[in-house]
Image (tube, rainbow, N blue to C red):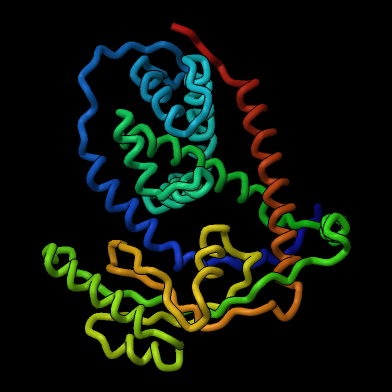
Amino acid sequence: MKTKNDARGNRGARVACLRRGFCVVIAAIFSCVATVPRPAFAQAIIASINGDPITNIDIDERMKMLRVLHKPATREAAIESLFTDRLETQEANKFGINPRDSDISQQIVKTAQAMKMAPEALVGAFEHAGVTADHFKAHFSADMGFAVLVQALNKGVEASEEQVRAELAKQGGKAAAGTEYTVREIILAIPRSATAEALTERAHEAEQLRERFTGCDSGLPMARAMNDVTVRDPLIKTSVEMGDGLRQLLDKTPTGHLTAPQRSIEGLEMIAVCSKGTAKDDSAARAAISQKILAAHIEADSERRLKELRARAVVVNH
């Protein structure tokens, strides 16, 4: 690995707009489940790590949460998971890192995508299992806070040309350029106070637009002519820069047509696929390889730091 004086810009900043619906849905769910009171059970401190207590209720909730995440959910595994969270939070707090709900939402979206489920479904599964919002939010906050810290400590680190070439050699010496897409996001606004009848009518309007939309040149002006409709600026990205779910969605949508409407807190969102074809060069693919190498480096560094923190931690069993 080598360092640069100038930090690279965030290449994926604009593609995040296509995931905005997930984050706002999670925020809306937080506002509902965060008010659910914790059951009144007798609470007892079972252990502490660096003076931070772990209770029997914490352990019970963590076991339930681990089952939802399809991870080992023994009592011992739950305690170690809680220890990890506490260590991550303690270390992040030293540097003043305190993730917001929007940051936690991103972590939930990432976890849900890895589990091939909708973020709101994951939150619903936690609630159904009896995991309080405070508990799972604390877990994802710890993960996000420590990830931000490790990334900051690795600021300026990037994959070397030798590492990129080595990875390319595994692909036959050439990076696949992938598919390049030009897309436009279309949002049909829905007021929060809308009635069920109004929602049904708006959904009907979205489906009508989708049926009539046969090309961006004629379809975008048609969308703009509708009431309370936003057409966002064009976004050009390659398949190697986006997640599997979004790539598959765009691949199965014919050029000049709209994806199926998806509900978000802003309204009904659709993506117009204006063009798609082979990318002009492999620069995006090379950048993706660099990001993959960097991600592996950061993950290894994170594991190393956590192992050191755990080795130095003062654990007391009560």
